[in-house]
Every structure is written in structure tokens, then in C-alpha cells.
Image (tube, rainbow, N blue to C red; front, side, top):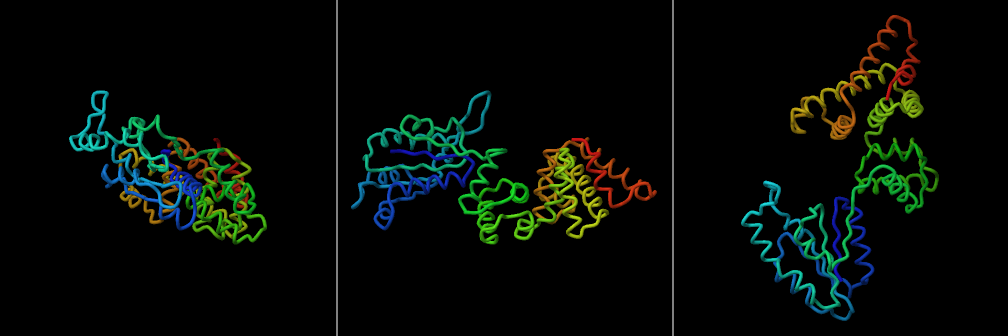
Length: 332
């Protein structure tokens, strides 16, 4: 039996690998009959020997190869076709007998080939497609990602409010490994009660900074209720309206500058330096928002902030209602 596990989602890919290993045996005897090879350096003869060795005292022998298919990725596309370098041609020639070798390997051998992102034209993927069970693991987005995160809390025996889950997702982003760690941390901290936004703010670093990013997103997207709740929560935590207005204005200016600089192909290190950002978290979130927002949206937000600032200074607008006015007046 041959399994090919590949794709960008390394967490789900590794979990599937663990499932397959468990399904084919546990304990010392299973470990003795499991071989893990580094495909980036392994030779064809090494792989052939591993696959053709019979198991000891168990019905199955597990051979796991990591990084072999990535090693076989072909060269640049020129004039509508891929052109291989001499080194790539040599490597592909060396592994040409792989299909025929695997076609006659002992039925006791379970081969699992593990890889990250590969092209559809990968020669090993093409050669083994009719022999193997192929599973691709994509990065999740949208509702699918939300469902996955909810399921992790269920698996951890924990409950979380929808608002707290959104806050956690925003704070950590799409890093599923880190999210899983935070799920266990929050579940342990809550001790059986429902996890709240306050728990996330307490347990996750940079929570208050993250709330500003989330509030800017909510304002621009026209999610009035969500933005108002965030603004009032920040006020309850001791942040003044002037501080919030200043932080929103700062973020809008950063996004305008970041978009202009990124269009000039400035690398991340120089970009962060020119923006005056020293926090990796702030830089990461700024760039995420930059990709999702237009210059016009940011300029419109700055214009609204200027109008509000002038109205406050002229006594035309009470300061404690300024955030409500900004949020209610923002256009998605």
C-alpha cells in the first residue's frame, strides 16, 4: 500500500501521518518495523532496500519518506514548457525505476510519502498516481477554518463564546499549530467554564494591540455592532476616546504608507524599519490589513477622523461620543 500526503497545511498533514502510523501498529515491535527516510538526501537504492525488507515479528513494515517529491520539482517554465537543468535530468533519471520497484514490493510494506507544496506535474506524483492513495491538505479559510477551530475546542472539552473565538482567530491568524496550542492553554485556564473575550485578552500576548486591528477592520467593513462593542470594551479597560482615535488614525496612516512601499517592492525588514514598527505582531497584522484594504478606504477613514477631531476641538461634538460617531459614519 502506498500513501502520498502533500499540501500546504502541515498540521493536518502531520495529523494524518500520525493516524496512519497508529493504524499500522503500536508499541516497540511497530517502532522496530518503522523506517523514516530523509527524501532530500536518500538514494534510490536506500529507498528500494527499505521497501523490500520484510518485517520482523509483525505483519507490516512502515516506510516513511519526507521531502522526496520536492526534490524532483522541475525547472523554470520557458516558452510555455518546463525546461529541466542537467542536475534535474540526472535526478529524474535516477528515480525512473521507482514505479516498477514499488509495483513489486512486498505487500507487507506500507509506504508513506510526505511532502509540502508540489506542482501537479511533479514526476513522482505523476508516476505513482495510479498506485497510491493521494491526499492533499489545503490551508483552510472562511467558514471551514471557523468550523475547524470550533472543533478543536470541542475536542479539548472546552466551550468558547463566538466573540472570543473571533478574537482568538484574529490575534493568532491562520497559524493552525499556534492556534491549537492556544486552544489547550485557554481550555486549561478556563477549567470547564465558557471561555470569554477577557480570557483571550489575558492569555494571548498583544491582545490589546490586536483589538485595535480588529476594531479598524470592523469599522472599515461596516460591522457597526462589532466595532461598537470593541470600542466600549477598550474604554472599559481604561483607554480614553482620544487614545482610541489616535491609534485608529495611526493605523490608517500606517496602512497607506505600507501599501505605497509594498508597491515599490521594498523587502519586509526595510519596510518595517521605514514604518517605524518594531513588533513582529504589529508588522504582520499591518501587512495583512494592507493587502485587504484600498488606499481610498484608508484615506476616507482619515478624513472622517480629521472631521471628528475638528468637531471635538470646536465643542461641536462631545468627546465621549466621538467613537460612536466615527463607527456609525464609516462606509464599508
